[in-house]
Length: 119
Image (tube, rainbow, N blue to C red; front, side):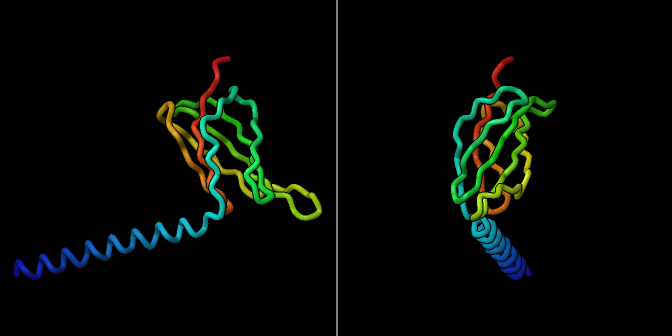
């Protein structure tokens, strides 16, 4: 009886680990571009513009909130005739000061460490 319990436990653990690796692979496959912006100094409520490559850009605006720092993004794409259109508007909240955060949307992953300048 004890031996069969060990075998069942080992099988369930293996299934869990394989499932986690498959999920990570699927998430990575959906991300086509990764952009590490590094340390970004924001003035509270003032937008910053960044090029993401592959005809995409983003505007990021940071502000202080009760939980920490909130960064709102507007990811835009430019088509062949030069028309710019929004594709996503994710939000990132950093609850621990001086930590990197990452947000992914529309096939782009954006990583940054937001620093709010004192007014």
